[in-house]
Length: 147
Figure 1 (cartoon, helix red, strand yellow):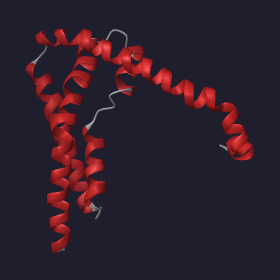
Figure 2 (figure 1 turned 135 degrees about the vertical axis):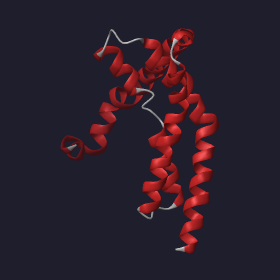
Figure 3 (figure 1 turned 90 degrees about the vertical axis):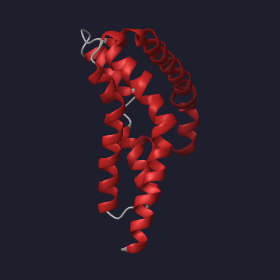
């Protein structure tokens, strides 16, 4: 950070091809790889325990509920509580599968790719986020007015 402060705009412009432009392209390839791995491993979820599938959906709801309670207790605004709920409900869809893939190579990819990217992520996008925003608005905004 000190080098960035000292070099200023000239240093930022010199490093832009490596730190900005290249990053976007590499991120696109990384996300494509993660998506392909998730798609390849979705079929392998068929033989897994039903409890794992329940957790893929129930886990985000429980974590969002905990975040709602904490945000409300701390007196946060409903927008900040909604954001906290989204963050708590979402497993790290990018970092965790990649780390598990390299740190525990014997782990079954259908569990960490298929469930996080194939079940939990779409659930959070389609149902979770609207639900978390609604709950934060309903609980936090309503109780803030009565406090």
